[in-house]
Amino acid sequence: MARHYLDHASTSPLRPAAREALTTALKLCADPGRIHEEGLTARHAVEVARQQVADLLGAHSREVVFTSGATESIAMACHGAARRDPEGRRSHSVLAALEHSAVRLCADREGPSTVVGVDRAGRIDPDVLLGAVGDDTAIVHLQWGNHEVGTCHDLAPVVAACREHEVLVHVDAAQAAGRVPVDFGALGADLLSVSAHKFGGPPGVGALLVRRGLRLDPLLLGGDQERARRAGLENVPAVAGFGAACESLGEGVLADEEADARRLTDLLAKGLAALDGVERYGDTDRRLPHLVCVGISDIEPQAVLLGLDRVGVAAHSGSACASEGLEPSPVLEAMGIDTHRSLRFSVGWNTTDADMGAALDALPGILAGLRALR
Image 1 (cartoon, rainbow, N blue to C red):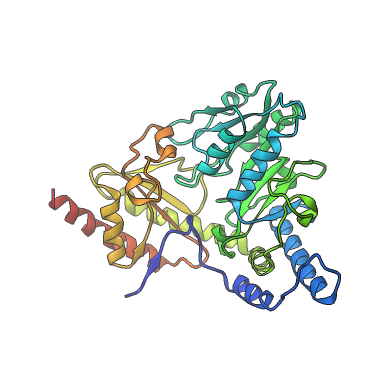
Image 2: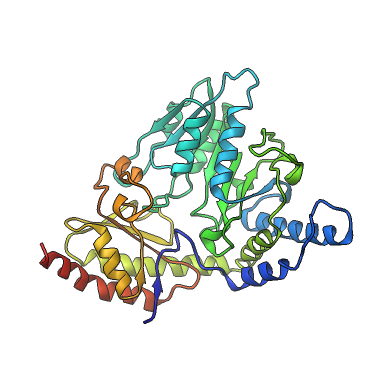
Protein backbone atom coordinates (compact mmCIF):
# COMPACT_ATOMS: atom_id res chain seq x y z
CA MET A 1 0.00 0.00 0.00
CA ALA A 2 1.34 3.42 -0.93
CA ARG A 3 2.01 5.80 1.95
CA HIS A 4 1.12 9.50 1.88
CA TYR A 5 3.09 11.54 4.41
CA LEU A 6 1.30 14.75 5.40
CA ASP A 7 3.09 15.58 8.66
CA HIS A 8 6.00 17.70 7.41
CA ALA A 9 5.39 20.36 10.07
CA SER A 10 6.48 17.75 12.64
CA THR A 11 9.50 16.59 10.67
CA SER A 12 10.27 16.39 6.98
CA PRO A 13 12.06 13.51 5.17
CA LEU A 14 15.74 14.02 4.49
CA ARG A 15 16.44 15.77 1.20
CA PRO A 16 18.76 13.89 -1.19
CA ALA A 17 21.39 16.65 -1.05
CA ALA A 18 21.36 16.58 2.75
CA ARG A 19 21.65 12.79 2.79
CA GLU A 20 24.63 12.88 0.45
CA ALA A 21 26.44 15.56 2.45
CA LEU A 22 25.74 13.80 5.73
CA THR A 23 26.98 10.41 4.57
CA THR A 24 30.09 11.97 3.03
CA ALA A 25 30.84 13.83 6.27
CA LEU A 26 30.50 10.61 8.28
CA LYS A 27 33.96 9.75 6.93
CA LEU A 28 35.40 12.78 8.75
CA CYS A 29 36.61 11.46 12.08
CA ALA A 30 38.42 14.43 13.56
CA ASP A 31 37.70 17.25 15.99
CA PRO A 32 37.19 20.49 14.01
CA GLY A 33 39.10 22.29 16.74
CA ARG A 34 42.40 20.58 15.95
CA ILE A 35 45.09 21.97 13.65
CA HIS A 36 46.14 18.71 12.00
CA GLU A 37 44.94 17.94 8.48
CA GLU A 38 42.03 15.79 9.61
CA GLY A 39 40.82 18.46 12.01
CA LEU A 40 41.12 21.22 9.44
CA THR A 41 39.15 19.13 6.92
CA ALA A 42 36.35 18.76 9.47
CA ARG A 43 36.54 22.50 10.24
CA HIS A 44 36.20 23.29 6.56
CA ALA A 45 33.03 21.19 6.36
CA VAL A 46 31.54 23.02 9.35
CA GLU A 47 32.36 26.48 8.01
CA VAL A 48 31.04 25.70 4.53
CA ALA A 49 27.78 24.63 6.15
CA ARG A 50 27.72 27.74 8.32
CA GLN A 51 27.89 29.91 5.21
CA GLN A 52 25.18 27.85 3.51
CA VAL A 53 22.86 28.33 6.48
CA ALA A 54 23.67 32.04 6.62
CA ASP A 55 22.96 32.45 2.91
CA LEU A 56 19.50 30.88 3.21
CA LEU A 57 18.55 32.94 6.27
CA GLY A 58 19.97 36.32 5.24
CA ALA A 59 22.61 36.35 7.97
CA HIS A 60 26.36 36.74 8.30
CA SER A 61 28.16 33.47 8.86
CA ARG A 62 29.48 34.66 12.23
CA GLU A 63 25.89 35.11 13.39
CA VAL A 64 25.16 31.38 13.01
CA VAL A 65 25.58 29.27 16.14
CA PHE A 66 25.03 25.56 15.55
CA THR A 67 22.88 23.76 18.14
CA SER A 68 21.03 20.47 18.47
CA GLY A 69 17.84 22.10 17.18
CA ALA A 70 15.34 24.88 17.79
CA THR A 71 14.52 23.68 21.31
CA GLU A 72 18.12 24.19 22.43
CA SER A 73 18.32 27.45 20.48
CA ILE A 74 15.27 28.76 22.32
CA ALA A 75 16.74 27.72 25.66
CA MET A 76 19.96 29.56 24.75
CA ALA A 77 18.02 32.70 23.89
CA CYS A 78 16.01 32.66 27.12
CA HIS A 79 19.04 31.85 29.28
CA GLY A 80 21.27 34.48 27.72
CA ALA A 81 18.68 37.25 27.74
CA ALA A 82 17.85 36.74 31.43
CA ARG A 83 21.52 37.12 32.37
CA ARG A 84 22.49 40.19 30.35
CA ASP A 85 21.84 42.52 33.27
CA PRO A 86 24.54 41.76 35.85
CA GLU A 87 22.36 43.22 38.60
CA GLY A 88 19.43 41.00 37.66
CA ARG A 89 16.92 43.82 37.25
CA ARG A 90 15.93 42.85 33.70
CA SER A 91 14.87 39.21 33.56
CA HIS A 92 11.22 39.65 32.57
CA SER A 93 10.02 38.18 29.28
CA VAL A 94 6.96 38.86 27.13
CA LEU A 95 5.47 36.26 24.80
CA ALA A 96 2.35 35.45 22.86
CA ALA A 97 0.01 32.81 24.27
CA LEU A 98 0.44 30.55 21.25
CA GLU A 99 4.24 30.28 21.40
CA HIS A 100 5.75 26.82 21.28
CA SER A 101 6.04 25.04 24.63
CA ALA A 102 9.84 25.37 24.45
CA VAL A 103 9.46 29.16 24.60
CA ARG A 104 6.79 29.13 27.29
CA LEU A 105 8.61 26.73 29.61
CA CYS A 106 12.08 28.24 29.16
CA ALA A 107 10.77 31.76 29.69
CA ASP A 108 9.06 30.70 32.91
CA ARG A 109 12.23 29.03 34.15
CA GLU A 110 14.45 32.05 33.58
CA GLY A 111 12.32 34.68 35.31
CA PRO A 112 8.91 36.37 35.45
CA SER A 113 6.96 36.36 32.21
CA THR A 114 3.85 37.96 30.77
CA VAL A 115 1.74 35.98 28.31
CA VAL A 116 -0.31 38.06 25.87
CA GLY A 117 -3.51 36.67 24.39
CA VAL A 118 -4.49 36.18 20.75
CA ASP A 119 -7.75 36.30 18.82
CA ARG A 120 -9.70 33.35 17.43
CA ALA A 121 -7.48 33.22 14.34
CA GLY A 122 -4.31 33.14 16.44
CA ARG A 123 -3.39 36.76 15.69
CA ILE A 124 -1.71 38.98 18.25
CA ASP A 125 -2.13 42.73 18.50
CA PRO A 126 1.40 44.21 18.37
CA ASP A 127 0.33 47.17 20.50
CA VAL A 128 -0.94 44.86 23.24
CA LEU A 129 2.23 42.80 23.10
CA LEU A 130 4.40 45.91 23.35
CA GLY A 131 2.19 47.27 26.11
CA ALA A 132 3.37 44.41 28.29
CA VAL A 133 7.01 45.51 27.97
CA GLY A 134 8.33 47.23 31.07
CA ASP A 135 11.58 48.54 32.49
CA ASP A 136 12.42 45.05 33.72
CA THR A 137 11.82 43.33 30.36
CA ALA A 138 14.81 41.54 28.90
CA ILE A 139 13.29 39.84 25.87
CA VAL A 140 10.15 39.59 23.74
CA HIS A 141 9.37 36.31 21.98
CA LEU A 142 7.22 36.21 18.84
CA GLN A 143 6.88 33.33 16.38
CA TRP A 144 7.26 33.91 12.68
CA GLY A 145 4.37 31.51 12.09
CA ASN A 146 2.46 29.15 14.35
CA HIS A 147 3.24 25.44 14.38
CA GLU A 148 -0.36 24.27 14.76
CA VAL A 149 -2.59 26.65 12.82
CA GLY A 150 -0.06 28.42 10.57
CA THR A 151 -0.96 32.02 11.47
CA CYS A 152 1.90 34.45 10.76
CA HIS A 153 2.61 37.58 12.78
CA ASP A 154 3.55 41.14 11.93
CA LEU A 155 7.10 41.16 13.22
CA ALA A 156 8.35 44.51 11.94
CA PRO A 157 6.62 46.88 14.42
CA VAL A 158 7.54 44.66 17.36
CA VAL A 159 11.20 44.51 16.34
CA ALA A 160 11.38 48.27 15.74
CA ALA A 161 9.74 49.19 19.05
CA CYS A 162 11.87 46.78 21.06
CA ARG A 163 15.03 48.14 19.46
CA GLU A 164 14.06 51.63 20.67
CA HIS A 165 13.66 50.32 24.23
CA GLU A 166 16.81 48.18 24.12
CA VAL A 167 14.78 45.01 24.63
CA LEU A 168 15.87 41.87 22.81
CA VAL A 169 13.55 40.17 20.30
CA HIS A 170 13.68 36.43 19.69
CA VAL A 171 11.86 34.98 16.68
CA ASP A 172 11.02 31.29 16.61
CA ALA A 173 11.32 30.56 12.88
CA ALA A 174 11.30 26.77 13.11
CA GLN A 175 8.22 26.53 10.86
CA ALA A 176 9.24 29.39 8.57
CA ALA A 177 12.84 28.57 7.70
CA GLY A 178 13.05 26.61 4.47
CA ARG A 179 9.36 27.38 3.77
CA VAL A 180 9.33 31.12 3.14
CA PRO A 181 12.10 33.70 2.56
CA VAL A 182 13.80 34.61 5.83
CA ASP A 183 16.14 37.62 5.95
CA PHE A 184 17.60 37.95 9.43
CA GLY A 185 19.50 41.09 8.57
CA ALA A 186 16.49 42.90 7.11
CA LEU A 187 14.23 41.76 9.94
CA GLY A 188 16.48 43.36 12.54
CA ALA A 189 15.69 40.84 15.27
CA ASP A 190 18.35 39.97 17.82
CA LEU A 191 17.86 36.21 17.91
CA LEU A 192 16.25 33.67 15.59
CA SER A 193 15.94 29.90 16.12
CA VAL A 194 15.60 27.15 13.51
CA SER A 195 15.67 23.35 13.21
CA ALA A 196 17.07 21.55 10.16
CA HIS A 197 14.67 18.61 10.26
CA LYS A 198 11.62 20.80 9.72
CA PHE A 199 12.48 21.36 6.05
CA GLY A 200 14.46 18.29 5.00
CA GLY A 201 17.73 18.55 6.90
CA PRO A 202 18.97 15.97 9.41
CA PRO A 203 17.41 15.64 12.86
CA GLY A 204 19.45 16.72 15.84
CA VAL A 205 20.86 19.94 14.41
CA GLY A 206 19.71 23.54 14.17
CA ALA A 207 20.94 27.04 14.76
CA LEU A 208 20.48 30.15 16.82
CA LEU A 209 21.17 33.30 14.86
CA VAL A 210 22.70 35.93 17.13
CA ARG A 211 22.88 39.51 15.89
CA ARG A 212 26.43 40.75 15.43
CA GLY A 213 27.70 42.58 18.50
CA LEU A 214 25.26 40.86 20.88
CA ARG A 215 26.97 38.93 23.68
CA LEU A 216 25.05 36.30 25.64
CA ASP A 217 26.12 33.95 28.42
CA PRO A 218 26.26 30.43 26.94
CA LEU A 219 23.79 27.79 28.05
CA LEU A 220 26.27 24.92 27.67
CA LEU A 221 29.67 25.26 29.30
CA GLY A 222 32.84 23.25 28.96
CA GLY A 223 34.64 24.28 25.79
CA ASP A 224 35.23 27.10 23.36
CA GLN A 225 33.36 25.61 20.41
CA GLU A 226 31.17 27.93 18.32
CA ARG A 227 33.34 30.89 19.40
CA ALA A 228 32.65 30.02 23.05
CA ARG A 229 28.89 30.39 22.54
CA ARG A 230 27.99 26.68 22.67
CA ALA A 231 30.28 24.07 24.23
CA GLY A 232 30.59 20.54 22.89
CA LEU A 233 32.10 18.82 19.87
CA GLU A 234 30.31 19.88 16.70
CA ASN A 235 28.07 17.26 15.08
CA VAL A 236 29.95 17.54 11.80
CA PRO A 237 27.85 15.11 9.67
CA ALA A 238 24.56 16.68 10.79
CA VAL A 239 25.91 20.19 10.32
CA ALA A 240 27.06 19.30 6.80
CA GLY A 241 23.63 17.88 6.00
CA PHE A 242 21.97 21.01 7.41
CA GLY A 243 24.09 23.20 5.18
CA ALA A 244 23.38 21.12 2.11
CA ALA A 245 19.63 21.27 2.76
CA CYS A 246 19.90 25.07 2.89
CA GLU A 247 21.99 25.26 -0.27
CA SER A 248 19.50 23.06 -2.15
CA LEU A 249 16.86 25.77 -1.69
CA GLY A 250 18.81 28.34 -3.69
CA GLU A 251 18.34 29.51 -7.29
CA GLY A 252 14.58 29.87 -7.04
CA VAL A 253 13.88 26.47 -5.49
CA LEU A 254 12.53 27.98 -2.26
CA ALA A 255 10.10 30.20 -4.19
CA ASP A 256 8.94 27.25 -6.28
CA GLU A 257 8.43 25.06 -3.22
CA GLU A 258 6.54 27.82 -1.40
CA ALA A 259 4.20 28.31 -4.36
CA ASP A 260 3.58 24.59 -4.69
CA ALA A 261 2.94 24.23 -0.95
CA ARG A 262 0.33 27.01 -1.11
CA ARG A 263 -1.31 25.38 -4.11
CA LEU A 264 -1.49 22.01 -2.38
CA THR A 265 -2.78 23.35 0.93
CA ASP A 266 -5.34 25.54 -0.86
CA LEU A 267 -6.55 22.42 -2.65
CA LEU A 268 -6.70 20.55 0.63
CA ALA A 269 -8.49 23.38 2.44
CA LYS A 270 -11.11 23.58 -0.30
CA GLY A 271 -11.78 19.86 -0.05
CA LEU A 272 -11.96 19.94 3.74
CA ALA A 273 -14.39 22.88 3.67
CA ALA A 274 -16.84 20.74 1.73
CA LEU A 275 -17.07 18.19 4.55
CA ASP A 276 -19.80 18.44 7.19
CA GLY A 277 -18.74 19.56 10.65
CA VAL A 278 -15.27 20.74 9.61
CA GLU A 279 -14.01 24.23 10.53
CA ARG A 280 -10.67 25.66 9.44
CA TYR A 281 -8.48 27.20 12.12
CA GLY A 282 -6.01 30.07 11.88
CA ASP A 283 -5.64 33.10 9.62
CA THR A 284 -6.43 32.00 6.07
CA ASP A 285 -4.61 34.96 4.46
CA ARG A 286 -1.52 35.67 6.55
CA ARG A 287 -0.34 32.10 7.00
CA LEU A 288 2.51 29.69 6.51
CA PRO A 289 2.26 27.95 3.14
CA HIS A 290 2.63 24.35 4.20
CA LEU A 291 -0.01 23.50 6.80
CA VAL A 292 -3.77 23.41 7.26
CA CYS A 293 -5.46 22.86 10.62
CA VAL A 294 -9.15 22.09 11.02
CA GLY A 295 -11.53 21.16 13.79
CA ILE A 296 -14.07 18.34 13.48
CA SER A 297 -17.11 19.23 15.53
CA ASP A 298 -18.28 15.82 16.71
CA ILE A 299 -15.45 13.27 16.36
CA GLU A 300 -12.30 12.69 18.38
CA PRO A 301 -9.21 13.15 16.18
CA GLN A 302 -7.46 9.97 17.32
CA ALA A 303 -10.06 7.85 15.56
CA VAL A 304 -9.71 9.94 12.40
CA LEU A 305 -5.91 9.68 12.47
CA LEU A 306 -6.10 5.91 12.90
CA GLY A 307 -8.56 5.69 10.02
CA LEU A 308 -6.28 7.74 7.81
CA ASP A 309 -3.25 5.69 8.79
CA ARG A 310 -5.05 2.47 7.82
CA VAL A 311 -5.39 3.77 4.26
CA GLY A 312 -1.81 5.05 4.16
CA VAL A 313 -2.18 8.72 5.13
CA ALA A 314 -0.04 10.17 7.94
CA ALA A 315 -1.37 13.35 9.61
CA HIS A 316 -1.28 14.90 13.07
CA SER A 317 -3.43 16.41 15.79
CA GLY A 318 -2.52 18.89 18.51
CA SER A 319 -5.14 17.31 20.76
CA ALA A 320 -4.00 15.52 23.89
CA CYS A 321 -5.25 12.09 22.86
CA ALA A 322 -3.18 12.13 19.68
CA SER A 323 0.09 13.76 20.76
CA GLU A 324 2.88 13.29 23.27
CA GLY A 325 1.39 15.53 25.94
CA LEU A 326 -1.50 14.94 28.28
CA GLU A 327 -2.84 18.49 28.30
CA PRO A 328 -5.13 20.12 25.73
CA SER A 329 -3.41 22.14 23.04
CA PRO A 330 -2.35 25.47 24.62
CA VAL A 331 -2.42 27.06 21.15
CA LEU A 332 -6.05 26.20 20.50
CA GLU A 333 -6.93 27.01 24.10
CA ALA A 334 -5.40 30.48 23.70
CA MET A 335 -7.48 30.97 20.55
CA GLY A 336 -10.66 30.10 22.45
CA ILE A 337 -11.60 27.13 20.27
CA ASP A 338 -12.16 23.42 20.89
CA THR A 339 -8.85 21.97 22.05
CA HIS A 340 -9.87 18.33 21.61
CA ARG A 341 -10.78 17.90 17.93
CA SER A 342 -8.06 19.40 15.77
CA LEU A 343 -6.53 17.76 12.71
CA ARG A 344 -3.40 19.11 11.01
CA PHE A 345 -2.13 18.28 7.53
CA SER A 346 1.25 19.63 6.39
CA VAL A 347 3.12 19.30 3.12
CA GLY A 348 6.78 19.43 2.19
CA TRP A 349 9.41 19.20 -0.51
CA ASN A 350 8.29 15.78 -1.81
CA THR A 351 4.49 16.09 -1.42
CA THR A 352 2.43 15.35 -4.54
CA ASP A 353 -1.11 15.88 -5.75
CA ALA A 354 -1.63 12.16 -5.19
CA ASP A 355 -0.94 12.66 -1.48
CA MET A 356 -3.63 15.35 -1.32
CA GLY A 357 -6.02 13.16 -3.27
CA ALA A 358 -5.49 10.21 -0.96
CA ALA A 359 -6.43 12.27 2.11
CA LEU A 360 -9.45 13.92 0.50
CA ASP A 361 -10.71 10.63 -0.95
CA ALA A 362 -10.44 8.84 2.39
CA LEU A 363 -11.85 11.41 4.80
CA PRO A 364 -15.56 11.37 3.82
CA GLY A 365 -15.80 7.63 4.33
CA ILE A 366 -13.82 7.72 7.58
CA LEU A 367 -16.00 10.48 9.04
CA ALA A 368 -19.21 8.79 7.92
CA GLY A 369 -18.12 5.48 9.40
CA LEU A 370 -17.23 7.03 12.74
CA ARG A 371 -20.48 8.97 12.92
CA ALA A 372 -22.43 5.80 12.21
CA LEU A 373 -20.90 4.21 15.31
CA ARG A 374 -22.34 6.79 17.68
